[in-house]
Image 1 (cartoon, rainbow, N blue to C red):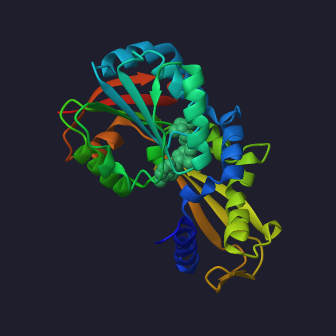
Image 2: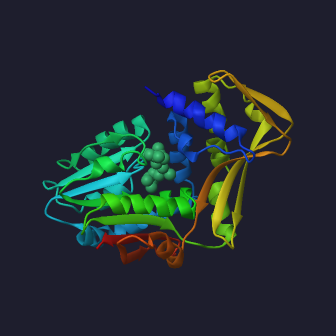
Length: 312
Ligand SMILES: C[S@@+](CC[C@H](N)C(=O)[O-])C[C@H]1O[C@@H](n2cnc3c(N)ncnc32)[C@H](O)[C@@H]1O
């Protein structure tokens, strides 16, 4: 059987031997990475969390009303800590709603299952640990489904990947099922960039933790003091990108698959994209699906949006 460790090692080998080096942001979330992401969510500069929280706190009742049904399965992809989600879930009837958070992090699933049951007693919670890309087919059922994909997680995919992913969701959804998408809106660089390069250096720590994770789990010998975090935002395309940059010429070895990789001074490892949206971009992404954009909610600054899409 292929283990998570083998998959991680294969990914690292593929990413670091490519001509433009890359590592997937999916691997940010080990225990330390999760803790760091929670700190990021509390930063003033990381406006995304507060904006979406504001929408769900103040308009959650109306959103829940538009999503409700007699028997409802609410499936959350990449659920994280659930702090925002509880503001929505508290408006659904407890006896006829099942909440299924999916996350690749086992700890996140253990924590959210416990906390959500404490926050909303009597809500049925069935946490699932795994990669949501691989488990969409398991989500088919006869009850009405609402899929939550919050926190602008879609923005970690390029538009082609996002299109493919939404098409996959469209296939597992039945007529009347709904998708609640949380998306960060396009806005100026002076607002967006600090969210990915904060003054306390927590986003930098979060990005570089990937190297620590490779050292710890795969026997790598990255000297993280010889690498640095770089974030850029291209206002015209509306995409923030994060990289890890090698400060010197150096070679790094990884015991797990007996490999070594050379880094030139200034060479970049691409680790994350964070796409920002407007309605035209999202309409292009849902094109060729039977999903209709029915409702849009925004925070008072109009930085962030939650969209309800219904399968017709
Ligand atoms: C940016 S956080 C967002 C959490 C939450 N949705 C929010 O809005 O606050 C991303 C979450 O998705 C999880 N994740 C990332 N890639 C995943 C994948 N392929 N399958 C399942 N979970 C994933 C991470 O473990 C993390 O908890």
